[in-house]
Amino acid sequence: MIRYFAAHPTAANILMIAIILLGLSSLSGLNKETFPQLKADKVQVKIPYPGASPEDVEEGICNRLEDATDGISFLEEQKCEARDNLSQFTITMQEGGDIKNFKDDIQAAIDTITDFPEGIEDITVKELGRVDTVLLLAITSDLPPTELKALAEYYRKRLLQTPNIPIAEIKGFSQHEYRIEVKPEALKVYELSIQGIADLIKSQALDSPAGLLEANERAYQIRFENLRRTPEELADLVILTTDKGGQVRLGDIATIKDQFELENKRAILNGQPAAQILISKNKSDDTLKVFYAVKTFVEEENARLPEGTQLIITQDAAGIVEDRLNLLLKNGWQGLLLATLVLYLFFSFRYTFWVSLGLPIAFLGGIVFMSLFGVTINMISMVALLMAIGILMDDAIVLSESIESEHRAGKPPLQAALDGTQKVMRGILSSFTTSVLLFGSLL
Image 1 (cartoon, helix red, strand yellow):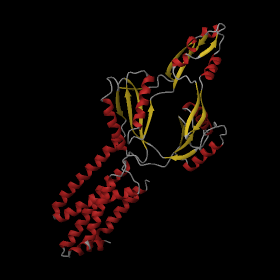
Image 2: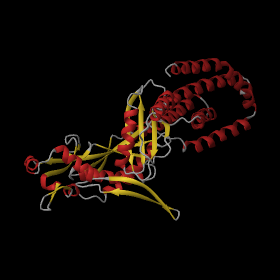
Image 3: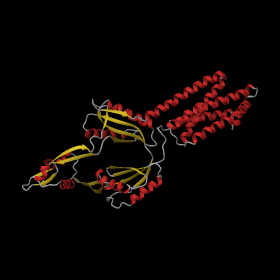
Image 4: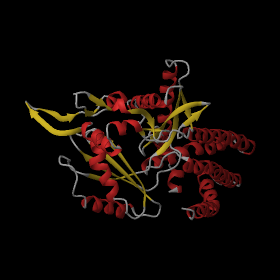
């Protein structure tokens, strides 16, 4: 092959141009992330439940899934997200487990559940890859905790509607709850008990699906709804009726507080209470594209927010990727420039030009293969590229010096290229093989 390309420079030039074009076209398609993707470690279970509210899904599906899968081997974490008409249950596997066996165990555990509510649709069980954290977005404000969480939920939905932002989760809050403190004297006066009041609240604060009504090619959700969703609605709930026809409501005998389960579990940033939104990405997403989408969103929103409320980007993992990428580019052009200057001191311009041109062409060729094999630009691959700068330039200088030496000895250019290459080929290949074996053993 060396003889062929040395004897046919046109073919070599065509190959070089093809590598340049393919490398440039592949460069934009490479995703940038912090670390390469590892094997799947999550299994997701989706169960549609038409006509059901998040509370119905939590009670009828999530609790049963959590109980059934609690004893599975290599189980690390369970997380169930209850939405309107859908349960999304995610189970994380510990390191060392086999994802296929883990998924089969989950499927077997789900098959043992016999008391799912009527009306659920087909259950889907699938593997999930890892997700990478891109950044943590903090919302600082002096609003009460409940209003701050509502603001965070508003921004979470807005972020998910923004292109290039795939995953957003609210952090920094414990379980939201209504705390009902019954007055002891009211229990005596009306001969009530705490359990009796709890049962009355449960029976009257009812919201349950009643199925679907299909008519004229349209489907309508039918529900019986009497759920109390605010402290005021709870306070208006009738506890009992007196002998004289009067009504005693919950607000007459109790104080209702809208709060979080753990008041001390909250985030503080710059001395202000803060809500947190964790922005993550899937394997197919680009870290820098996600980061800049969030950054643009934050800049636009901060320009409109009132004084005292602010969006702040913290824990920026994308900055690590960007810094390392800039370091790679900086080292690349600096190494190329220095090598070119040194080569020009000892070789003619023609030798210097072609040796220097080999570095960017080799990099573009590497980009093509990275794209073909699904390798991303990450911390590991960028370290490898940084090391390749030195290896390539060393080998190129040794090879060019050998060819130049043969040419000075009076050999024709073609023969000098062949003999000079053959003279150092074993040394270059052995050096390359040593590096491959050394770093390959770390995999």
